[in-house]
Image (cartoon, rainbow, N blue to C red):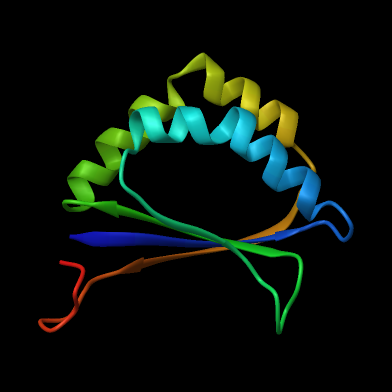
Length: 104
């Protein structure tokens, strides 16, 4: 298993709007194609205006196939247009569990 760890910084004052919009229009498309949502979080202490989400995949090939299917979905294109300009920046990481991790 690999985990796609994404941290998005949302424009100040718009995090509630972003989360509500993502839940309504982005999440259904991602669940349809990406499947394994491990968690979706909002920062409460430390750097604010951040959302962090974790998606699990069997391997890199699985991740690429699922992303390609999502990217080809017209509903994903509509979501991207709706959310355009809401994010300030993003940081992506691919995590691999170690031998004793409960998630493998």
